[in-house]
Length: 302
Image 1 (cartoon, rainbow, N blue to C red):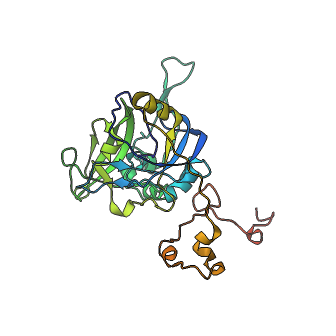
Image 2: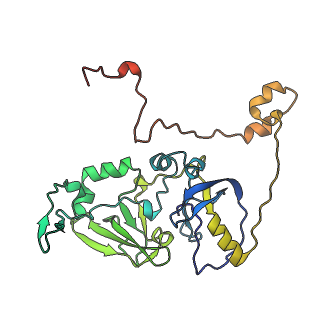
Image 3: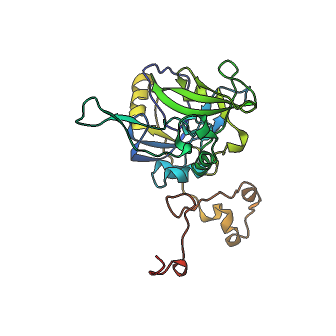
C-alpha cells in the first residue's frame, strides 16, 4: 500500500499489466531494503475498493517523493495514503516510568527521572487527549478508526479503535494491537489482530470519514519498481520488456498557443485540457512560512 513493488518466496503469477516508465532513482531505498529502481505511472485506484469490487487496497506517491526532492510531511499533504495501516497514528504504548539497571551496579534497579506528559503516557487516555489529536492532525495521520469486519471486531459507531503498536511478522505481515474504546460507557479493552498483510488490515479497520484525506490524482499515482524486484520477477516469471517511443509535440499542439494559430480548431483540445494542482513548499516543517526582512526582530529584541 506504500506504492513499492515487493518480492516474496511464495510469489505466483496473476497476470500481466502495462505501465508507463517515467524515471528512475538509484539511491531510493525501499522498506524491504532494496536500493534503486524504476519510477512507474499507472491509473490504479488509490485506497480501498468498494465492498462489491475486488479486494485490492493500494497507495501511491508523487514523482517528487520517489526522486527524494521533498520531505515525508510535504508528501503526506499531497498523497497521505490514509487507508494504509502503517500510516495510522499510534498512541498509548508507553509506560509512565522506565526501570533500568545502572551500568556497573549489578542488581541495582533505579527509576529513571523522566517526567512525561499524560499525552505520551500509557493507556487509552493518551489517545483521547486533545494534544494527541493535535499531533495526529499536524502529522496528517488518521487517529480514530472504525471496524469494518464483524469477524474480528465490533462494527458500530459506538466503538472507536486506536492503534497501540504494530509488529513485523513473517513474510511482510503485521501484527497490530489496538485499544477498543466504548464511546458510551468510556470503557477500554485491548485487542490484537492476527498477523496479516497491511492490505488485509485495511479491510478490517478504516479511518473515520472526517480524518480521511484523499490522494490528489493530479500528483499521485506513481510507483517504485526496485531493480532487485525486477530481476526476481524476470528470473521467476520472465516476460518483462519496455517499449521506448520518441515523441515530439509541435507548438501548435498546445491550447496555450492557439492565438498563434488562428486557422486551427482547438475546440477538442480545449475540452480535454485540465488545470493541474500545484504545491509550493517553503520549508521542511509544517506551517512554515517565509518571513519578510522587515518583520524580523531586532538584535535587542532577540
